Length: 205
Image 1 (tube, one colour):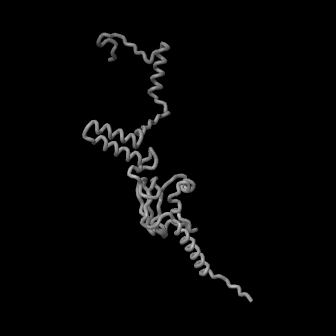
Image 2: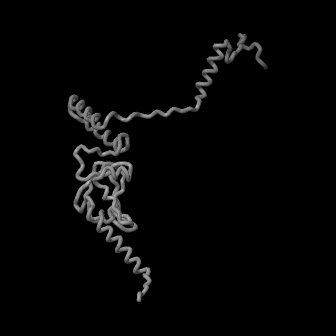
Image 3: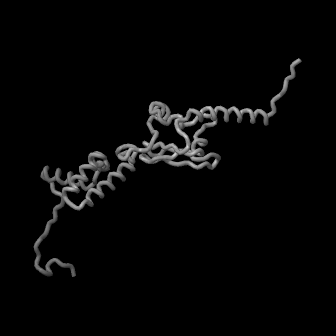
């Protein structure tokens, strides 16, 4: 004889939590990182959760920086389904499929790693301008030339300046054209007639 039992809401919640924890523990066993490991950022502006909860903390990545993995960071990396974005660390193809770009790589950043996302962005402009100032501060002409060449080799050519062209007609240009056309056609703009008079002649009294 079998006995049917109805699972209470509390029991169901406890069971689901246990299943999620089990999946999370299984995923943790294959994560490519553990606490105290280091990965570096290739782009700026990516959000890295560093805590859990409604008001959880997070860190905004900056290209070229090194990030030390913590247990809190690992715990906060999981979604409700038990998947961790840290599974993508060390897999460029998976990051491209997920985000359309490679954001992180394992290990410390190389010494010459760019500190900007893409050429032309605000970080690139700031870094290039600082490098240019440092180059110009060199004590000799030869040192300055070599430093400036190094800036161009690392950052590429300087940013181009933009020119805003207004499509609103300039009234002074239009008036000048009309006056020129009138002169070309033999016309005149204004004629004044003067008649010589002796002083006091013709004046009203």
